[in-house]
Length: 400
Image (cartoon, rainbow, N blue to C red; front, side, top):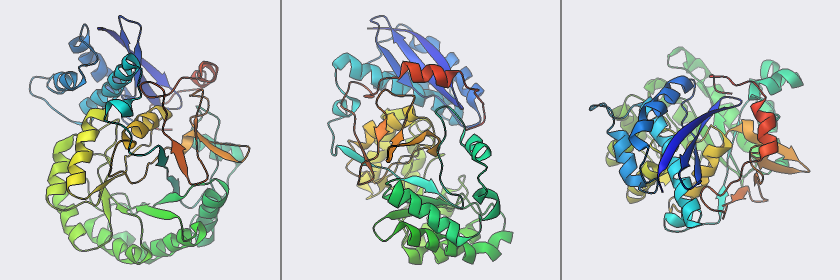
């Protein structure tokens, strides 16, 4: 079997997929995309394509090295690694389809048959949108006043958490705060603690609640951890500028709260650096940025040796989620799985992910989990009718 071509597809509201075609008619799907940099990644996929034509797509490790070293010594970086990641996912999809097995069986077999999901929450009541529509469009259509009027009211945060857990079925949530990189926000730190406590109360005692504080100034990070840690968050995400692993080490040493990071780290090397310094309790590589299934598996293994759990970053399309779930299934140190709320759907009292994209979208069960697909490759089949409607919607280079 040989690779014949790479076909790029812009999928609304804002994603890019690749189809890797072969001379035996087997086609693999992947997601080579970087938020707000779609055209640059498309160009990089096109640059890499000649290195792959005529190659055996099941030699995945070899082709990963070929792609990584293609560039006259220029290695890594978010554009190149995102291109590699999407192609790598498609190669695994081909390998699974050729073998008639799901990817998780090729990786050694599942350690679990269900994957616990978490959903983002904050100062707005949850809603869902039509497949292919941006999440922002949902606010505009519904006239949701919560986002504009009551964002700082703890009662709104508590009610959003209640809806997501008691009505939508999630057993894990993640709160988002955006303190920025300055010091002026210090006056709001105590209020952030109040909002997190409100989410805890709204979600109930049996729900895991994590928090993302989005790369603040290290001094602010330490203040925020001080007010958040007493509420026992599942983890505190990215409490540092992403450029400085040493800053993360210093912050992690000041607290016993679990610290998470890695969504914008590319490749195994920076994860090794952070793990070797004892900086992380939770690893968050993005399967579409960090190097695909091949590289994220290696990152997870390093984490296992350092007693770190894995919560793959996944704010992209349902295709990225399908790839993440295949890897989640085999990881002994799996913790919980993120997804993009734009792919949520509610119908007949159930919560779905990927409606319109997949013939059989993922379904959230009564314990807040989705089942690991057992079909070959990624285990998903595109909904051709639904995709036709989605592809008729506008596409944007800005993340939906």
